[in-house]
Length: 311
Length: 273
Image (cartoon, each protein chain N blue to C red):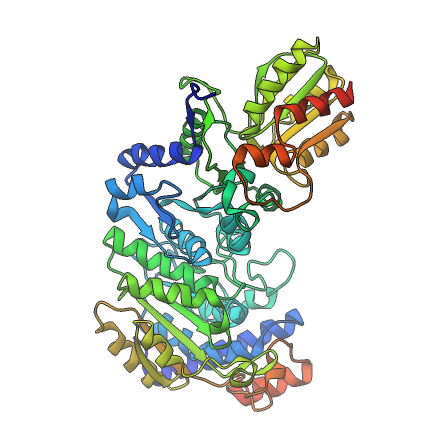
C-alpha cells in the first residue's frame, strides 16, 4: 500500500489554520506544549502574535480559551484527545459549553492509532463524553481533505465544537471539491443488503469492506458519518428501512459513540439490527497502528464479519 | 465617586438584600457573600468603568466572580448599582429567575462569566486579560476568588499563565476568610501564605483589610501602578461579616437563615432600615 498517499488529519488541521489565519484576523490558536504534534506550529510560525502556548496545563488551556472567545475571538484550542475530552472535561462543559463560547476543541491523537504511546494516551471515550454535553457539535473527519472542508464550515459557524483528529496518515477518501455539510452524512457507496455507517479513519476500512462483501455478492451501502452530533437521522432511518441491518464502525468505544448514537435513532424511529464495530470496552496498548487495529477488532475484516452476521 | 461613608452604607444595603434573597430562596451561601461584599461594592461603585444601562458597553472593565457561590452578593451589588431592581433579589434561585444559584452570564445582566465550578473563572479571567492584550484594549479585568478556592489546581496553572503574559491588566482579589465548607482553610488544606505563593508565581501582591473601604481603595490605586505583572490583592475578610451569629462560622457557608435569624441579621446590619 506504499503507493497510496496518506495524510494525517492533524496535518490537515495545521495547514487549515495557516490558511484560515490569513483570512480571519480574530482567530486565536492555543496549544498545551504539543504544537509540533498537533501541528498548530504551522500557525504559530505565521502568526506568533495570535498563538498562545499554555504549557502543560489542559484545564487552563480550555478555561482561558473560553475567556478569550468571550472577548470576541474564535479560538482553536488543541491538545491530545485524551487530555482535551478527558482531563479538561468539566471545564469544557462549564466554561465553554454553558457559556456558549466560540471555542473549537481540536483534539488530535484520538483513538487506538496513537500507537506506540499505549493505553494512557489512547482515548476511546472522548466522543461519548462530548456527546452528552448539550449542543456540542462533534466532527470526526475521514481524511485530510474532508477535514479541511469541514473545519472551514465549522469555523465559519459561531459556536463550540469538538473536532477529532488523528495521528496516523489516512488515505484520501474525498476530492477537494466535495460538497460537505456539517450534520449531513455522505453516502459513499450505494447498496441494499447491509449499511455500514462509519466515522473517522474507519470510513476507509468500510470502503474496503464494501469491496470484500461485493466479491461475495453482498451489496453494502457505505455512509460517512463525519458529524456525530448533530447526527444525520434521516440517512440512518433510510438505511434502516432499506437494508437488512446496520454495522457501525468507529475508532472509539462501542459504548456511547457512533454506534450508540445510531442505535438511539433506530430504536426510536425504525428498529433494526445494529452491530457495533469498535473498541470493545477495554483499554488499548502499545504497538503499531495497523497491528492495534487488528488486535482490537477495527479492520475491514471485522466489518465484513459483522455484516455477514446480520445477513 | 462615593465617599467611604457612602460605600459602607451601600455595602450594608447590599448585605441586607443578599440575605433577603437567600432567605426567600431557602438556600444559598450567606457566609461567603457577606465576606466578599465590601470588595464587590468598592470595585463596582468607585473603581470599575461600567454602565448599568449598557451592560455590554465597549471598553468596559470586567469582573469575574470565580467564587460563584457568592452570587447573592454579586446580584445584590449589581442591583444596587442599577443593573436591575433590588426587588428581583427575592427571585434568587427560583424557577425561571435570572438570578441562578450560581451566576449565569447568559441570564443575568452584568455577569461577565458563568461560574460556580471553582477555579475556572480565574483561568477564564486570565484568558480575558490575554485577549485584551492581543486586541490592544486598555481596560481591566478583575477576578475574585475565595481562599479555599485556591486549593484548585487550575488556579496555579492560570497564575503561571498570567505571569508569563505579564498581565498588568488583571487584578485578582482573594476573599481571604480562612473558612471553607469542611472548616478552617489552614486545617482542611492550608493555602497560606497566599501573598508569598503569588509572589513566587511572578505576581505583584498586596495584603489589606477586606472590610476597610479606604484600605481597599488605596490598595487598588497601588495595584494600578504595577507594570508588567498581574496583581493579587489578598483581602483579609470574615465569613458572615456584619452578622454576629454568622461571623467566622463555617456552618453558615451554605445555609439559609430562617425567619427569626433573618430578622436578627437585618436588625444587626441596618437597624430598622
